[in-house]
Every structure is written in C-alpha cells, then in structure tokens.
Length: 125
Image 1 (cartoon, one colour):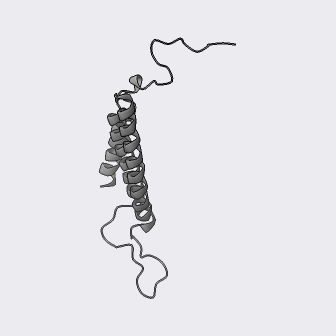
Image 2 (tube, one colour):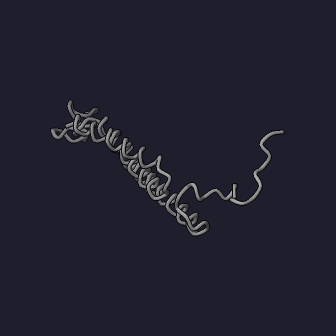
Image 3 (cartoon, rainbow, N blue to C red):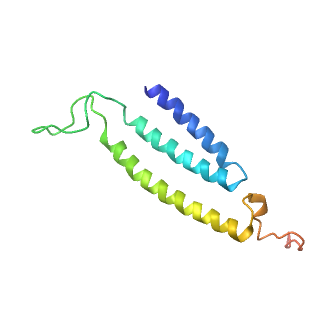
C-alpha cells in the first residue's frame, strides 16, 4: 500500500512542478494546490499506513501499542491543510486582482515595470 502512495506522491510532485513552471497564472495556482497535496500525502505516507491498531493509548499504559500508526504526521497534516488552504485563498485573490489591474493572466504580459514602447533603463554605469 505504501508503494502505491509513494508512486502517487511522485506523480503529484511531477504534475505540480510541471504546472508551476507554466506561464499562465491559473495553471501556476493549480500547480501550487497539487504540490501542497503532494506534501501532505508524503507526510501521511511517512507516518506508516496501518489498519490494525488506532493511535490511541489504552487505559493504564504509557505508550502506544506496537504496530499503531504514528499520530504526529496526522496532526501535522491537519495543520498543513489549513495553512495551504489559506495560502491558496490568498494567492487566488492576489492573482484575481492582478488580472483586474492588467487584464491578462499570462506572466509575460504582466511586466508593468518594463512597459512596451518606452526606453529601456540604463544597462551599465
């Protein structure tokens, strides 16, 4: 089972990086979302995937039973989901405002600092 998840993590990373390297803002946003899901799945897979024992300490015991899933990666994933959602919402609003201001979602057309038709800044001193 962990082998399948490891392959899926690699596939998610590959697709996420491919989309992030695009020149369209929407594809970049989708790539960031897929990349964050890949990181969450990687953390989840590293915490051992078992079905036999829940990560609950029985009464009178001090440690988890042998073979129990590690609860720390699960807690980290819950935190990462909230953080990645808020980050995605922020960059989505940022991309929307950039589209409203510039009227283009292609990164090559978003060169406000280098407008076409004007002289180039000095290249040397």
